[in-house]
Length: 504
Image (cartoon, rainbow, N blue to C red; front, top):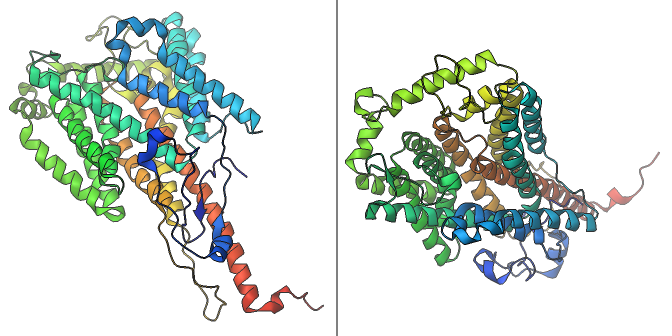
């Protein structure tokens, strides 16, 4: 049986058993699903699907959680003395070694290979193919070893380890809480008048890494805000919902205070998609999202609206950044047309300064052009595949969770009636899927104004989308198999002659 089917579910009825102590450690009790409703033993035996549950120490899972916490919270920025400990690398090594040892011990393939894993590997191949043709091979090699290899390893770890609905919830909640911490610091910094840039107009990231500048900070808030809203309106412990609601408000305020034009456009698109996607699944999410935006807009300072107007009116941009962005975009297109196959080398656009370049030593502030100009078509094709695959994964998961629409023929034998019950695992997957599409849409719009093709944000959201898709498809296949067996048993009870050999 596939390792992806790591949940308990009742076929058709969606009965769910309470997770055991090994699956639900004390520090994650916010994610305990409801106990199975009281039903007869015969009904449970006839309808229950029992999935294998591992009981070994899950170092791969713990390593992934530790790496994610260090990546987002960046304690080394506040305590420089621990930089030498390389905490992120240690947790990554724990996760990867735990993955290899654990899966080999269970007789499973080391890596759960998906089309996205293959595409990301092909993207790395494009970087290596372009290395000898780049303007600085040493710089390309540094990008490959210092950034890409780590990205690939953690992406494979996420896709393989996120093999249960509860794990996906815990993982997403960790990201939301970490983002909330960064957002809270940004809001307090703005109120205190510290960590501001451009003549005290915009708040910068309180930590480095993927939150290091206002545009990247806003992009991350937009990408992870749908998950915060999901937990705020998802039925569950009031403590979890209140924390998520507060985080969502802080994240929304952070986008405003960064005054990032790309972040604001991404926020508008993300909000629109979230409302459309959630109105049928859980209308409270759509209503709450609109209410949060309406409440936050009056808090936006006048300088925020002035900066947003500069998107369309160049005269309203005193910094000149609008025109500089347009110049860099034009130069990015020129580089891509000049080197359409392999580009100038991964990470080397800012180092490529031919005669006549106006914005020397600058990145091109557009994720798609970043890939196109630096890796050419060899890198652009798999990168576009990854983006499209994220949206398709969410759609596939939604369809799988909706289940097949069956029609009962008149006069066909029917089995005993089993009362419908709640399906918290299915509901969890469906709600998480609802957050994926707006998250990707918001990231894609914001990424048109930032060089984030090799940043962690997109790959985290994509890994969650793939994990949900794999679970939803496996779940639908299992439920369909058990429902088919139950229908056959019911038919035999209605017409015992089905068991007799056919006359020749």
